[in-house]
Length: 257
Length: 279
Image 1 (cartoon, one colour):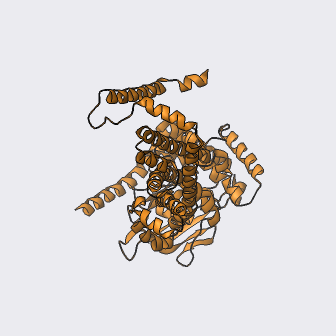
Image 2 (tube, one colour):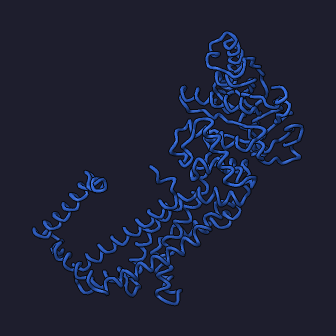
Image 3 (cartoon, helix red, strand yellow):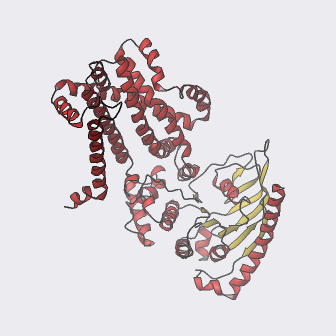
């Protein structure tokens, strides 16, 4: 009973109203044939296509391909980016050697890496992994770096006074201290990663939700384009939720409110 | 008391200490030729104008920072000079101005961090000692809470316990009760009084609050405006343990006048110096 009242409250009700209103507006736009939007399908057409797709293996296969690409590229970015960010945050000398190059490459939008990625990697699949990696890499590094430099010097001093050695300072102070920034970097990076993935799939991919949407376009199947868009939205949302859940698990001290 | 006092360690001797930040560049003289003595087991309150160099002195004793010239001795042993790079040690514990409990550790994990990381005792033994300390000061039941779940007054007490569990010779507190309201402060004073009387050790207590300084201190050390030097030492001869009704006594008011006069003189100098810098 308590759980139900937690889910069904004014806030969720407002959320439902907002969605219903949006669908109604959409229906209206198609109904009155608003200029330039005549080709828009009815919500019902999209729903029918969506339900049909959900029953097919090919649709879920595209989900699987996209998720795997995200997973591989994203994990690689964390595995390389987090240690690099920590190293840059801890050693001033290391930072002064690496940061300038990093700052030259960072402003390049990940999508701008597409041509060179396709040219240089032996397979299309590898180039997509690489692009996803780029999408998350710079963000995680800059966040970890910031996280480390925001750790108050009193915490390090306190730990030293209490008898911590440099290795304790690293594992017990620097790593947990930068964890909130790591999670932020992962959350933001996950969003960018989906952007990059969809662009890469549309241009270069075989399979995947981006490719699926693009093929609906080339077949002029407008309801299915919308199905593709909604699928991408849901997939991105699920990934972000997963990262948030991971963050709460990793930082119990932030959860208790 | 006297036999116990003989066993107490933690005499600090500050001899002609000068600290210049960035000598090649901006050249800020934070302390100049500062000398005074702190007896073992003495509760010393350090007061002086803001930014005068009190924290600089604390950092030098604690081993967080070097000094430009002079010497600091602890129980006759040289712990800092230009020849010796001082290191923080478990015999000198610091309670920081803005609080330095580890937010990702529970109260229990925070308190036992020192003994465990030093490898002195087993985790379970340290936890037992910590639980006893907490219950002695009436703070049982918060072991598994994270610092941010506690009021700042409780946080400060936990941080002081985290220092005390290491049995340091010296506890240095840098304006630990800043930002607490007057009522919370009196609770903190009683807490500090209680732990100090239970196990006297040298206390180096920086504050802006003159009432607090006199109420807690064996002596009040007044520093000059920057560069910090010794301005005056006022010995507080009120009986121990201090109680709040003493704050109205004639003896107390006389002490306060004396301290206030010295502090005011320096504050005025600091203010005028500030105006010169602005011009």
